[in-house]
View 1 (spheres, rainbow over the protein chains, first blue to last red):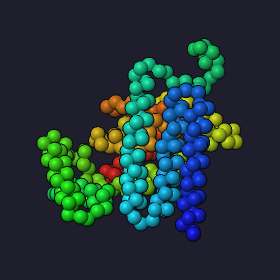
View 2: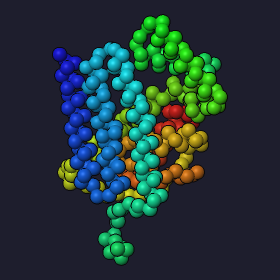
View 3: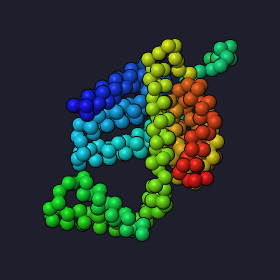
Length: 109
Length: 158
């Protein structure tokens, strides 16, 4: 019972973070910023959902497999993000950066 | 020693993934482990970098630190996405020095930066990293090199 409640809290929090990440991907203005929003779904959202599912699975082989998925995500998601960002930079996509001085911004634009 | 632990780990991996103890499946497991070890021996890819066994005891402490950073960064980025209490984004591109001596350290550092939301390593050269950060705060925290120092301390004992 307590485990059920705990796992539902984890699953709901994970789902909510997934939605926040999705909102971020749509509302940010350039490619590189969107990568950061996608980072939320890659990390904490996935962790919460996997640990919620792990609590449901209990001490079993399924829980071990969930832990493995977690480990693989931990190594592959930053690699994928880096590959995307690096490819974007090399193909000449300039990030939209915020500037300190608005006067300078007008000058450059 | 290294190939022995490799065999044991691979076989345990097989065992936990299959969950069956019938002789046929165990035999198939032994065959796949033998094939994998043979192929990686022929390709000569089992070395300190691809199989950092000597560091495996030190990783849990670092993961604990990294996990805390990830949670903090997630909350920060989520606030900025939702514009919570006027939090906003101000994308920055900064170059930070790479203080790691080994290639493995550089990869751990670059991966950790990308893993924490709000900062993505865009490119990696011999002595510096180019990082895209979502906010000025995230950029200035990176500029302190705190994470690089944690890696040196916790993983490489320097």
